[in-house]
Image 1: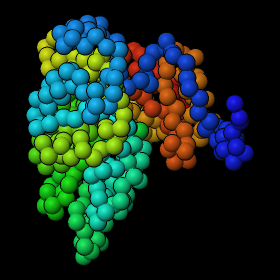
Image 2 (image 1 turned 90 degrees about the vertical axis):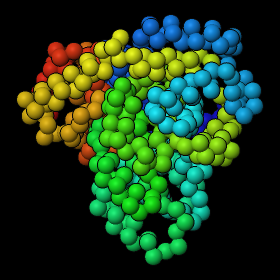
Image 3 (image 1 turned 180 degrees about the vertical axis):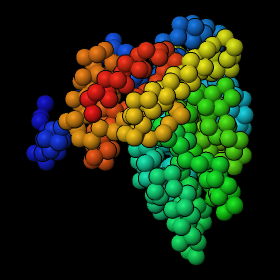
Image 4 (image 1 turned 30 degrees about the vertical axis):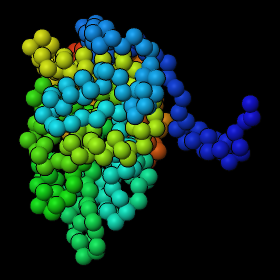
Length: 383
């Protein structure tokens, strides 16, 4: 087949010179500090068995969905699992998408309209930003987790003829594991008739009663317009959902292109989502959330003991980072960690700003105190 055009080759060469060229990694058998499987659900045999049982119960003897959800792909497990998700989160409706990326581009490309204004956190996930680029609204960023900056920017446009204002943030950000003051954000949006949308990808399963998320934990669900949740993190499977009202659900089914024009998820994938929720619904039979919280507390304690806290942001989530400036430097520390048997992801620029490169630790219920301590001691000896 033909090679890349010269201008695209140049882009690859530029990235390689910056030590930022990506490649698909091989599966690792090292101690896991890099996956999003926070609760170990991806490797839980009980969830696997329950998923197979659900498929059998609902007579889904198909390998695929066979079409989009508006054609032949809305198989029997979809309404069952969507109802289960909505009950668990105590919301009117849950609309399942194929992935978090699909959910965000599907939502943000069709909900904000011409004449609307969207304010989004400057560190919002790429899927949110890509979705916003596809709509006809005016989109503006505000400083990370900075409510004052948001308030000032909202004030500047209040004299203009604006139909609707949307504010978009995340409950737990994927790079530093930090969170905004969601209560204050929700109060401001309620007072100003603003539609607040919260991406809960990294909060589901970790925060809230039985893992319902940070919005639930803070008691602000009635002040939120929509929540986007994903199942590829703590639930250890695939897919995502928008939690919303009945009319928002109907609107998305009619206008969300990433839902309408893609083949649905196969029965096995939907059954695994349902099985993972069944696991969350029965916390007495599973200690994974308790074990994860213990590891988060230990990580923060050890980070302080080793004076690593000055190189990182505070996080009470499963995500923790140590700033190691420079692509070459952070990659070299990650290689040293590998030599000790630890898999820790180096985050390079341009994914993060130059000078803010970092090691991203993802904690899990199946990690132990000794592993955490040893990995951090390796880091402090390298920086």
